[in-house]
Image (cartoon, rainbow, N blue to C red; front, side, top):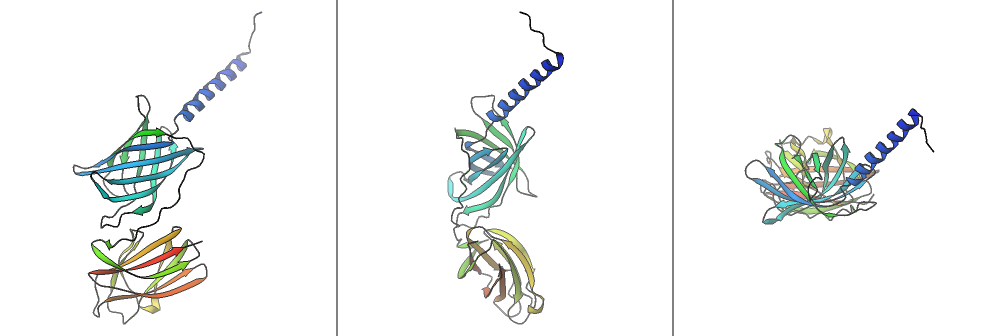
Length: 278
């Protein structure tokens, strides 16, 4: 028996076959698994990177561990986020989960990476850089394929650093808050004498060389916290005319107010632990 098909039905069947082929190709390119590789920037900077990624409904999440070759005491663990656009995977480090208690400052990076599945191994490669800095070349090879429905992104405990930018940190106070955002009000606790400070939150600079104003005109700095222990470090850029550098802080979070005084010198910074339990 000869079966005749209408041209439109033939076209419809062809479209369905193409869609199924395209869908199977996309599902085959699942980045879920463990990746290992190297980031090279310039002539002298080399980093070792391990990533655990999970792809789910077009969204990519996971964690990464970055360190130096043969210097594993310097490291950072990052949270990874990303998605696919066209033929590239746009991945970025969204935040620092943990970092070693050393003077090296880690920053979040990201890039648009290509996927190569033609060889024996799957490879992700492309430029990887922090905002405003020279890009490096990232090359990752998948070492283990893992398919999971949801990523495991339990925040790791933050290690309180002994030094920040080469200066010792004195951890003198702890504050408990019930919100993941707060507003920090900064002012000079003594007579206004030209104090200037730099503030770090969880290892990242949030305010560089800002003047400490009079209490009548406090400076407001919004802060977003991570669940668990966060750390705020105040570094003195000078000591004004009346050492040491003294600043009053007022923390407003979820209707609560916390007041404290932080003192820093040119040799020792002041540290504040903020425990977030929203």
